[in-house]
Length: 167
Image 1 (tube, rainbow, N blue to C red):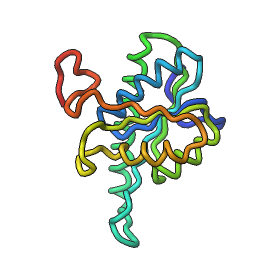
Image 2 (cartoon, rainbow, N blue to C red):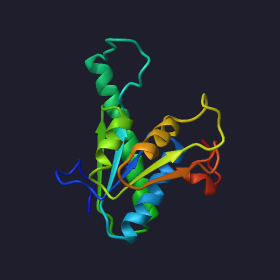
Image 3 (cartoon, rainbow, N blue to C red):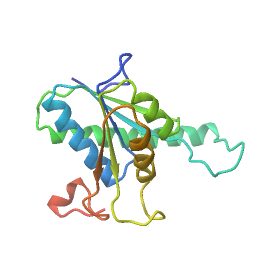
Protein backbone atom coordinates (compact mmCIF):
# COMPACT_ATOMS: atom_id res chain seq x y z
CA UNK A 1 0.00 0.00 0.00
CA UNK A 2 2.94 2.36 0.47
CA UNK A 3 4.37 4.41 -2.37
CA UNK A 4 7.25 2.75 -4.14
CA UNK A 5 9.40 2.95 -7.23
CA UNK A 6 8.02 1.54 -10.46
CA UNK A 7 7.15 -2.13 -10.12
CA UNK A 8 8.33 -4.82 -12.52
CA UNK A 9 4.81 -5.72 -13.64
CA UNK A 10 2.81 -3.24 -15.69
CA UNK A 11 0.38 -1.11 -13.66
CA UNK A 12 -3.26 -1.03 -14.66
CA UNK A 13 -3.52 2.78 -14.84
CA UNK A 14 -0.98 5.53 -15.45
CA UNK A 15 -1.50 9.16 -14.46
CA UNK A 16 0.94 11.53 -16.15
CA UNK A 17 1.89 14.61 -14.11
CA UNK A 18 3.94 17.70 -14.85
CA UNK A 19 3.36 19.73 -11.68
CA UNK A 20 0.50 21.77 -13.16
CA UNK A 21 -2.86 22.17 -11.44
CA UNK A 22 -4.59 20.20 -14.20
CA UNK A 23 -2.17 17.30 -13.86
CA UNK A 24 -2.78 17.18 -10.10
CA UNK A 25 -6.55 17.24 -10.76
CA UNK A 26 -6.01 14.31 -13.14
CA UNK A 27 -4.14 12.40 -10.42
CA UNK A 28 -7.00 12.94 -7.96
CA UNK A 29 -9.51 11.65 -10.54
CA UNK A 30 -7.28 8.67 -11.38
CA UNK A 31 -6.83 7.78 -7.70
CA UNK A 32 -10.58 7.67 -7.10
CA UNK A 33 -11.07 5.59 -10.25
CA UNK A 34 -8.23 3.21 -9.29
CA UNK A 35 -9.53 2.74 -5.74
CA UNK A 36 -13.09 2.22 -6.97
CA UNK A 37 -12.03 -0.51 -9.42
CA UNK A 38 -9.18 -1.90 -7.25
CA UNK A 39 -6.54 -1.08 -9.84
CA UNK A 40 -2.92 -0.15 -9.31
CA UNK A 41 -2.14 3.49 -10.11
CA UNK A 42 1.27 4.46 -11.44
CA UNK A 43 2.15 8.16 -11.30
CA UNK A 44 4.67 9.14 -13.97
CA UNK A 45 6.46 12.40 -14.63
CA UNK A 46 8.96 13.12 -17.38
CA UNK A 47 11.84 15.49 -16.81
CA UNK A 48 13.08 15.16 -20.41
CA UNK A 49 14.11 18.31 -22.22
CA UNK A 50 11.55 19.19 -24.89
CA UNK A 51 12.79 19.40 -28.47
CA UNK A 52 14.01 22.66 -29.90
CA UNK A 53 17.04 23.19 -27.69
CA UNK A 54 19.36 22.28 -30.54
CA UNK A 55 21.40 19.20 -31.38
CA UNK A 56 23.64 17.77 -28.73
CA UNK A 57 21.93 19.51 -25.83
CA UNK A 58 23.16 17.81 -22.69
CA UNK A 59 22.74 18.56 -19.04
CA UNK A 60 25.54 18.42 -16.52
CA UNK A 61 25.40 15.85 -13.75
CA UNK A 62 24.33 18.53 -11.25
CA UNK A 63 21.61 19.76 -13.64
CA UNK A 64 20.35 16.18 -14.03
CA UNK A 65 20.28 15.78 -10.25
CA UNK A 66 18.35 19.05 -9.90
CA UNK A 67 15.80 17.88 -12.51
CA UNK A 68 15.53 14.50 -10.75
CA UNK A 69 14.80 16.28 -7.44
CA UNK A 70 12.17 18.41 -9.20
CA UNK A 71 10.60 15.23 -10.57
CA UNK A 72 10.62 13.63 -7.13
CA UNK A 73 8.91 16.72 -5.72
CA UNK A 74 6.22 16.46 -8.41
CA UNK A 75 5.48 12.75 -7.85
CA UNK A 76 5.57 13.20 -4.06
CA UNK A 77 2.94 15.95 -4.26
CA UNK A 78 0.92 13.87 -6.75
CA UNK A 79 1.04 10.90 -4.35
CA UNK A 80 -0.14 13.11 -1.49
CA UNK A 81 -3.04 14.36 -3.63
CA UNK A 82 -3.93 10.81 -4.71
CA UNK A 83 -4.03 9.56 -1.12
CA UNK A 84 -6.13 12.54 -0.01
CA UNK A 85 -8.57 11.98 -2.89
CA UNK A 86 -9.44 8.43 -1.77
CA UNK A 87 -9.95 9.35 1.90
CA UNK A 88 -8.21 6.30 3.32
CA UNK A 89 -9.52 3.75 0.81
CA UNK A 90 -7.03 1.13 -0.26
CA UNK A 91 -4.86 2.37 -3.13
CA UNK A 92 -1.88 0.60 -4.64
CA UNK A 93 0.34 3.42 -5.82
CA UNK A 94 3.73 3.54 -7.51
CA UNK A 95 5.71 6.49 -8.82
CA UNK A 96 8.37 7.11 -11.43
CA UNK A 97 10.54 9.99 -12.57
CA UNK A 98 11.55 9.46 -16.19
CA UNK A 99 13.97 11.28 -18.46
CA UNK A 100 12.31 9.89 -21.60
CA UNK A 101 10.11 12.12 -23.77
CA UNK A 102 6.51 11.92 -22.52
CA UNK A 103 4.60 11.33 -25.78
CA UNK A 104 6.49 8.26 -27.06
CA UNK A 105 6.73 6.90 -23.50
CA UNK A 106 2.99 7.18 -22.86
CA UNK A 107 2.10 5.76 -26.27
CA UNK A 108 4.40 2.77 -25.73
CA UNK A 109 3.06 2.17 -22.22
CA UNK A 110 -0.52 2.45 -23.44
CA UNK A 111 -0.08 -1.02 -24.93
CA UNK A 112 0.36 -2.46 -21.43
CA UNK A 113 -2.25 -0.61 -19.33
CA UNK A 114 -6.02 -0.33 -19.18
CA UNK A 115 -6.11 3.47 -18.99
CA UNK A 116 -4.00 6.64 -19.21
CA UNK A 117 -5.06 9.77 -17.33
CA UNK A 118 -3.63 13.16 -18.35
CA UNK A 119 -4.36 16.73 -17.32
CA UNK A 120 -4.84 19.51 -19.86
CA UNK A 121 -5.44 23.23 -19.67
CA UNK A 122 -8.64 24.38 -21.35
CA UNK A 123 -9.19 27.58 -23.25
CA UNK A 124 -5.63 28.87 -23.15
CA UNK A 125 -3.61 29.77 -26.21
CA UNK A 126 -0.90 27.38 -27.34
CA UNK A 127 1.73 29.68 -25.87
CA UNK A 128 0.14 29.64 -22.40
CA UNK A 129 -0.87 25.98 -22.16
CA UNK A 130 0.99 23.67 -19.82
CA UNK A 131 3.25 20.93 -21.21
CA UNK A 132 0.51 18.30 -20.96
CA UNK A 133 -1.79 20.10 -23.39
CA UNK A 134 0.24 19.09 -26.43
CA UNK A 135 1.01 15.75 -24.79
CA UNK A 136 -2.69 15.02 -24.23
CA UNK A 137 -3.47 15.84 -27.87
CA UNK A 138 -0.78 13.52 -29.23
CA UNK A 139 -1.45 10.71 -26.78
CA UNK A 140 -5.22 10.66 -27.35
CA UNK A 141 -4.61 10.28 -31.08
CA UNK A 142 -2.09 7.45 -30.86
CA UNK A 143 -2.70 5.53 -27.61
CA UNK A 144 -3.61 1.85 -27.60
CA UNK A 145 -5.94 2.16 -24.59
CA UNK A 146 -8.57 4.62 -23.37
CA UNK A 147 -7.18 8.04 -22.42
CA UNK A 148 -8.96 10.28 -19.95
CA UNK A 149 -8.11 13.97 -20.29
CA UNK A 150 -8.98 16.04 -17.23
CA UNK A 151 -9.35 19.71 -18.08
CA UNK A 152 -8.30 22.34 -15.59
CA UNK A 153 -11.10 23.97 -13.63
CA UNK A 154 -9.40 27.29 -14.30
CA UNK A 155 -5.94 28.50 -15.15
CA UNK A 156 -5.51 29.99 -11.66
CA UNK A 157 -6.86 27.27 -9.40
CA UNK A 158 -5.22 24.32 -7.77
CA UNK A 159 -6.71 21.26 -6.08
CA UNK A 160 -6.64 23.37 -2.88
CA UNK A 161 -8.79 26.06 -4.50
CA UNK A 162 -11.87 24.92 -2.61
CA UNK A 163 -10.21 26.38 0.49
CA UNK A 164 -9.46 29.63 -1.30
CA UNK A 165 -5.79 28.90 -1.97
CA UNK A 166 -4.43 30.25 -5.25
CA UNK A 167 -1.38 29.37 -7.28
